[in-house]
Length: 321
Image 1 (cartoon, rainbow, N blue to C red):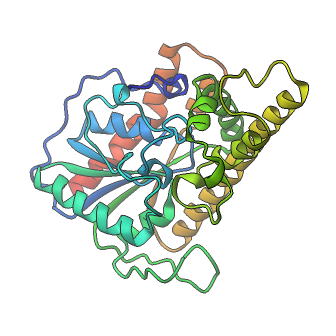
Image 2 (image 1 turned 90 degrees about the vertical axis):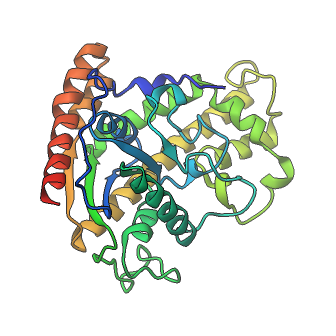
């Protein structure tokens, strides 16, 4: 089933036709990576860039690797991908164990080789900075978490020729937008999706691995322990049930904000380590969403503030070769 998610329209895709540039002379080790906190517009930008440069998108979001919970993990619906090939998006069994950074490095490397062999630009997109670090660094050490403890060194020696685009949004603005996005996800059927995923026996098992780490799963598992997960409108009727529902939603929003802070901290650490992150400010585009501007106005701002600067950066990257 193809999902149609209202929050996927927040950043209107460019109206320009798909007319990609020729990349026949681009070095085979070239890699374009989109970094940024959750909700910053990376997925939409990746599709817009693929309309200009012949690209295939490689997901580097930890939770989007797994099959299922498409609303909860905010996977880009098939109908919004504009026929751009996507890899490592919903490819892994959520019950078959955790995909480690080392495993991601191996899988993504193989995908990149295939993309290059077809003459396309590999475009890595996602908010899991530990996966991106594992993928691109030349001296990756699977025994170390470089984002845990000050003694572990973040490497700035790469095995690919990298162009890093950092899609950034002012945190106070992003926080407001993420709250709205959670509300939109709930309206799109997130609770029903979580109810289908809920397994009382698995809910008691620890530690959490794979898709069970996704924000929304633990918050509603706690709710479902007390209230049967199917066939109800949780916001009406029993005041205790309604209160527990609102508490679960509050925790989802709070945990999403905390995730965003951790993601931004990791990006800043990469920057301090010498990663050449080309920052693109998407704040105005998000403000337009929050202000309920028309689709045309949002598209104009998105194009001018996000897409055009990003295209310029990528063109310069291609010229440097």
